[in-house]
Length: 96
Image 1: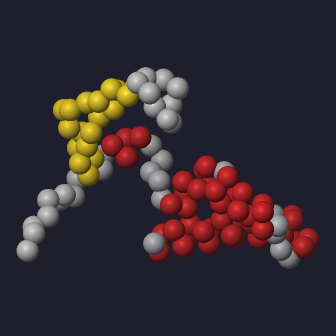
Image 2: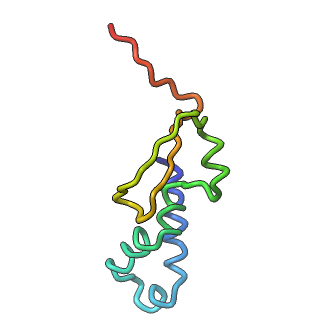
Image 3: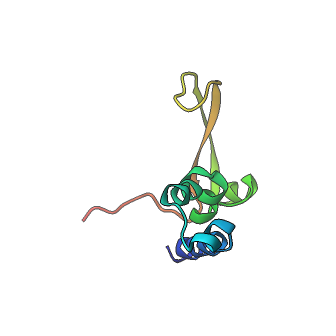
C-alpha cells in the first residue's frame, strides 16, 4: 500500500508542474481522475504493475493443464489459457 501512495505522490508532483496547475494553483477534478484511471500507463504505475510480461510470469509457475476459451467476454478471439499458482502461495487451508 505504501508504494501505491508513493506512486500517487509522484503523479501529483508531475501535475503540480503543469501549466494548468501553475496558473490556477489547482487542477480540474475530472481531469485528475482521468489521469489516474483513464490513462492506463498511470493506473498501472500507481498499482505497481510490472513493466514486462517476463516480470509477471516470473511470479507464477504455469501448470501443464490448459483451457480453451471460445466465447470470451474480454476478447473477440478464441484463446488457450494456462493455469498457475503464484510462487510461494500456499492455497491449502487447515480446518480446525
